[in-house]
Length: 73
Image 1 (tube, helix red, strand yellow):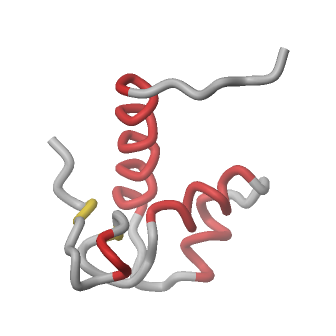
Image 2 (tube, rainbow, N blue to C red):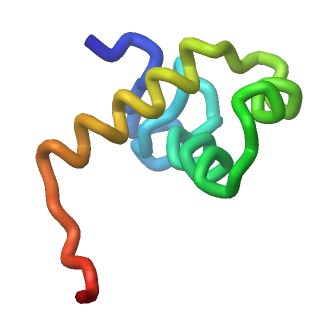
């Protein structure tokens, strides 16, 4: 069960955020995809915790299980 990811229509237009903040899950995923380490991300976002990053990844995995993207061959 995801407890750190919140979706509130009054915060960031209802996009998934971390613990009700304005920090988007997609921001953390994009930083990871760009090659930043967990420690670098945590240093840039002092309120963020290791568990928050882990839950962002778990959230992304769950999304992949329920949707597919068309990829160019």
